Length: 163
Image (cartoon, rainbow, N blue to C red; front, side):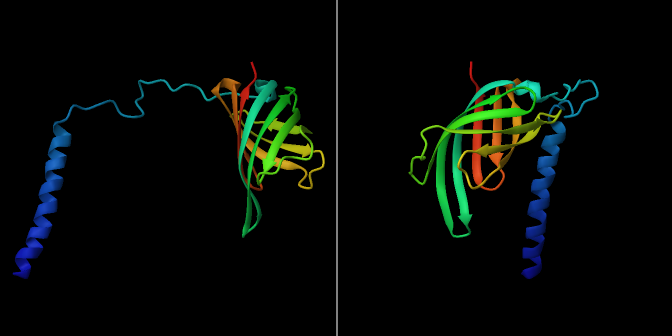
């Protein structure tokens, strides 16, 4: 009895796999994912000038004060990139439901953009003990959007070009 059960367990999966393979071989063949006939678009090329201008950001996440203490953070920011690696900004950030001491807090810093549209920045916020605030970003949508993550916390920001 035990030998018949083992045979059945082995035969059924083999029959199912054989049927799937038969269907797959009978299906029309599509072009391979990386066909030599297809031309790949060139990778994006970015520089500090790609993001020259003003961006409106939405900021959301969690401040990690210690392994057991976290605070929610929500905010908005208006940032100006000069196209030469310098940045200024005004932000209004609410931490754990508490409004900031200053309605619009100014900040300034520098940024670097890599040719592959990635980059990083350091920003000094007036009155902040966590200076500088470092983040990494990706330039998206041909420079119309910047997606950012703050390095020391679980905070992200998405900025869209102000038009």
